[in-house]
Image (cartoon, rainbow, N blue to C red; front, side, top):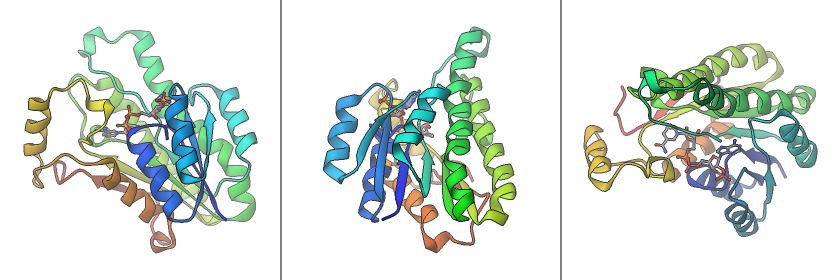
Length: 234
Ligand code: NAP
């Protein structure tokens, strides 16, 4: 049985991705940071395993990969967001954003790769954001970190192609999760209407794209950024 590790699998998009990959036949490691109970009950539901690690911490990630063993599919989904005027972003805000959203992706890729390179097989899917593509007002640090994930994806895909490892990126639009809980229902409704498909995305919409990119049907696709956004960015 192939294995998949989903960072930030305890809630939202990561939980839907974990469920979907389990349905696809993977043994899934559900990484989490703070929501232990959510991760453990999800892991139980899907026959996987919950693993705690702050992706911003190198040694915690090393311990996670040592515990998981060989990983065939890595989904770098763990992320934080913050809305602030650029002039109010502190050094600490900027560093934490990059530590989780960009550096977490860097280090989990690095830790998954020795096995993938050895077997010349593997798929990495990084979850960026439409704001990493076009920039979001009052989310400069988030947008910059998510743009870094896109750059990492493209460069790493070139480097790993000869090892038959594919690296792709998904750039979700507005997805109905806790991450958008700070917006009230009216703002969410407005955001939904901005998309040509006139609705918010669901975590399952993103999970379906991950499932596609992880599997054999995407065997000639690497280095791409797939928008799952209802057409809000075209
Ligand atoms: P969410 O509901 O807030 O869930 C975030 C997940 O990331 C949780 O499982 C959380 O784990 C985990 N996480 C946060 N910091 C972590 C850390 N330091 N180490 C390990 N895990 C950590 O967010 P979401 O909406 O599902 O977003 C998932 C990804 O999609 C993020 O990368 C986000 O930027 C991206 N995205 C989301 C949207 C959207 O509209 N929702 C749009 C574009 C991109 P714990 O709960 O256990 O702490």
